Length: 294
Ligand SMILES: Cc1cc2nc3c(=O)[nH]c(=O)nc-3n(C[C@H](O)[C@H](O)[C@H](O)COP(=O)(O)OP(=O)(O)OC[C@H]3O[C@@H](n4cnc5c(N)ncnc54)[C@H](O)[C@@H]3O)c2cc1C
Image 1 (tube, rainbow, N blue to C red):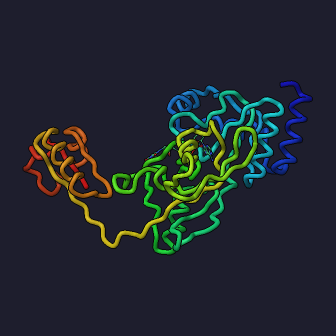
Image 2 (cartoon, helix red, strand yellow):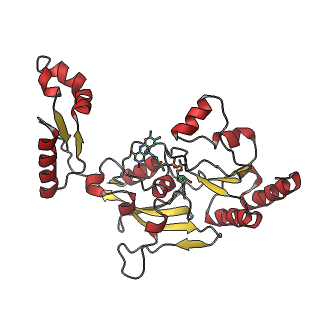
Image 3 (cartoon, protein in one colour):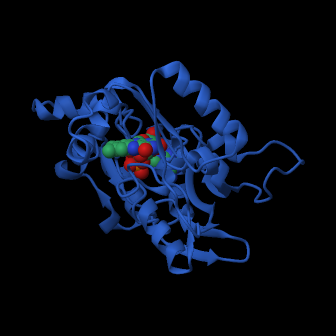
C-alpha cells in the first residue's frame, strides 16, 4: 500500500472510531497477529512474525463498526474481527493484512432481565463477566467452557462455543436469543428474538459458527437460568469401554444430567492416580478401568 493511500485510510478510520482507538504501532499489530492457534504460537516462539494487519481499530458500538466496514469496502481491504485472541483455530489472524477490528470496547452489559431471563451485552464482554452479572441476581449463564475467563461473548458465538454443562443446557446456539450484526457491506441488522419462530429462517444460526466471515456480531441477548438448588456429583467405574458406553446410553435415555463424561483407561488412570492411591493404595486394579462421571 502506498504512503498516500495509507494516510487516507488512517484518517478515515480515525474519524470513524477516534484517533486514540486507532493504531498502526508495531506492538499493536504484532500482538494482534498471534492467537491460541498452535501454528501462530509456534512461529512466535521461534521469533517469526505472523501476517499482520496495517491498522488496529477498537470501535465502541455497531455504528462505528459499520463505518469501519464501509471504509474497508471502499478501499477494498480486508477486515478481521478480534475478540480476546483465545481462538485455537487461527480465525482471528489477519492473513490478508488490512484492518483488525478489536471488539474489546464493546463490552457493556446493557440489561440483566430476570423476567425475560436474559442478559443483553456487547460482544466484547468477557464471558466470565456476564456470568458474574447473572450471579448478582441469583442466576447463571450455564455456559462454562475452559476459556470462560479469556474469551468473549462474540468469540463464543462466532465459533459455536460449548461449555462443560452442555449435556443439559446445550451449546451457545441454544443460549442466544438475539443478535445485532454488522454485515459485510456495513448494514446493521437485528435478528428476531422469538426463539424457534416459525416466520422465516433463524438468522442467528447463519452467524453462529461463521468465525466472523459473514458479519461482525456487536450485541447479543444471552439466556440466563436459575442457579441449581443442589449439585450432585457421581462417578462410576466399569471393567471396559463397551460396558461404560451401554450404561452411559441408558443413563442419558432415562434422565438428563448437566454433564456426563466417559474416560478411557489411560485418562481414568490419570484422573484417579493421585486421589485413588492416597485413599486406597492397595487397590491398583481399579484404575485400569473406565470411568463415567456425571
Ligand atoms: C485454554 C483454552 C480453553 C478453551 N476451551 C474451550 C471450551 O471449553 N469450549 C469452547 O467452545 N472453546 C474453548 N476454547 C476456544 C475459544 O474459547 C474459542 O475459540 C473462542 O472463539 C475464542 O474467543 P475469543 O473472544 O478469544 O475470540 P478470538 O480468538 O479473538 O476470535 C475467534 C474467532 O471468532 C471471530 N470473532 C470474534 N469476535 C467476533 C464478533 N464479535 N463477531 C464476529 N466474529 C467474531 C474471530 O474473527 C475469529 O474467527 C478454548 C481456548 C483456550 C485457549
